[in-house]
Length: 74
Image 1 (cartoon, rainbow, N blue to C red):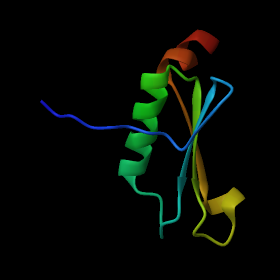
Image 2: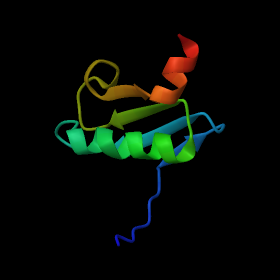
Image 3: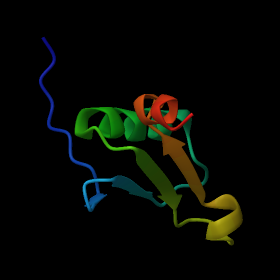
Image 4: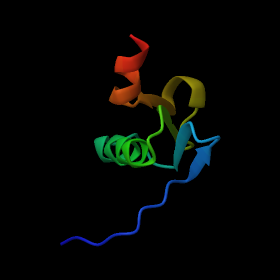
């Protein structure tokens, strides 16, 4: 059995999970972490923001969508 405490950085209006990082690049484990928070909180969307880059809008963010909500919107 694995016991852990999970804490997302921000949870906005019960609809957006925000995970903040300051690393050289966005690693796949960060995306997996965000997807876990999205699923556990039953949130439709999540955004991963990396502050260690020259252009946050181009290189420092990634938006992920909960598969459950993606299928409902199609």
